[in-house]
Image (cartoon, rainbow, N blue to C red; front, side, top):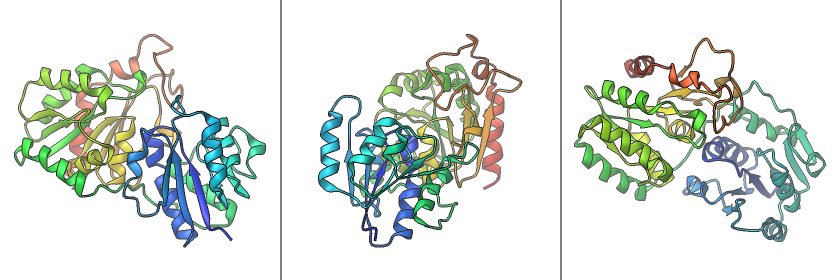
Length: 336
């Protein structure tokens, strides 16, 4: 009998959002089981208010806590089932420390013998469906269309009201120009020109984390219009989700805001550079459009992009014209 479940996802914010369907499916397939999630401190806030989760266990793998310390913590708790979407050796060690009799990951995951069950990793599937496939190891039949979910609450609604006051009742589009990986970022000039195209019909809210504050401020300054504001670095994850839920649309690079928007049902225009929709990280269960460079034989390179273009020209982004992104946005808005 499975009474307790640990899910390990210590990757980026978007990856954690794409793991929330697995959390939901566990609750449906294993009613009564307690579900804990191990993630990194910077993403933990995404899971606040989630009614399916008993505890979030934060582990700072970048140096805030020794691996041996969190291994001991997990061992003291103990679980019946451990599901590990994250495929690193560190995650395999964490799974083993859980003392779960059933430890499930992918056949491409590191630390194979540390898992008791390994399911096929389908590179052509969406990441949501790949994660859900882990439950096949314990005989669960799941809804493969289970959407990502996050749960903004009253605190986030209060933060949202402050931003809506600044917009003075205007309908708005969120634009997220940042990314952890430089090769995932469309050009600053591209975003400036896109925002100018959007302003006749919509206000624009530039969205991002603290690392995106300078970029978003520079775009807002160049546009120089009261209908364009930046909230980069001002909002928690769930406040960002509340903002996206109120938006008409999100336009974003291949980054976490895409998946947060999907989790609150907001349509998305996603811009791809060095990565590719074929890797399975597109918006899930919402209306969307994909815009990417055309006629290039040098991409995709990697799931996460990289620090620089290996060809040295970055043509996948520099040749992408604002008009194409604008047209995709207008198509989505027309479908309402």
